[in-house]
Image 1 (cartoon, helix red, strand yellow):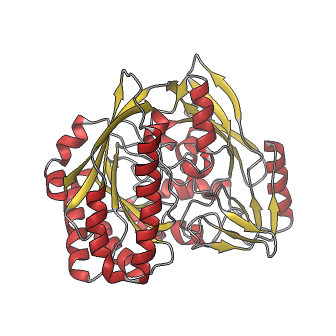
Image 2: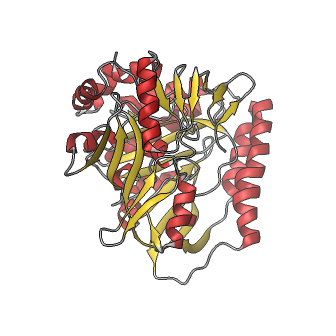
Length: 439
């Protein structure tokens, strides 16, 4: 599930298959000194620089025709501070490896997204999040970071040291420099009990505030062309562990959620008229289940069916209205949507360009199977989300530009002023950043 680079012609492609780039040079640094040297050399050669992780962004945020930094040797845990309850990791460490290594040490992140293939720096730089009533995105758990800036110097940032850089660089979009290490707050390993059950969309929306308030982590999936959802509540548990049985887990998570779903999407792509019937069957196929396991095994799940995605954060109180409008639009449009719509929440945080910066947020994510035309659906969805002052996820498809983003991000000017100071020559610029942050 990582991005691919074909040695034959030097073309890099993202996981979704919708972005390609041909870097002039690829660098695989093993230390922060290597990164600083690569940045200085790029500046001397007049080349732009981008770091790219596993290519899980659907936007061209990491694309470059200059120097592409691949951090696959910048991995592993630098240190664990049990007194401060923090862990410092190299930027290229995949979340999957971090989760396993922390569990071995009896530790865990507080919250995480639903896939763990990404590198820690790629996930945080784009604002990757899960769902939580009180606990926020992965970036909100960062206590410190190390950043190589445009002149090749290394900045250490925290609430006490370079605090204005720390405020912005936790979700830095790759615009402020190359992140080489991150320090996360951790806590003792804990168990979560997951309760998954089907509910009607009307009921979920009517009871949403209550479902949100009563559960530490609530999310749901709505199946377009139906009035059905699948809900998931994750709450801390004293145990004992009762993981999903191996056979049941394979059947539900691999066979139904990946295998059958893949085939259903192939059928839907070939014969779009079948999609509403498939959606009705899919929404009924998943039965209620409850299981208890260590946190990362409950938060995350495999995603083998490839797709493209758009996700917007709207004010939490606007969720029900926005989703009802989305449903009405799909119902009257003649669109055929084979992927469920994912809904999650996050509390307000204090990160400059976070999608939850300064406001309690609900996330609505729309997906289309890779290789099917998605523009009409995403354009219609985006016009609904933006009417509710929606903020797009930085790593997912959207058409917003700097002017429109400045209108929904109150601290936008603070970020661009910092960028002017740290990267006046735009060494870390690319087409995507030129669009979303301005020239």
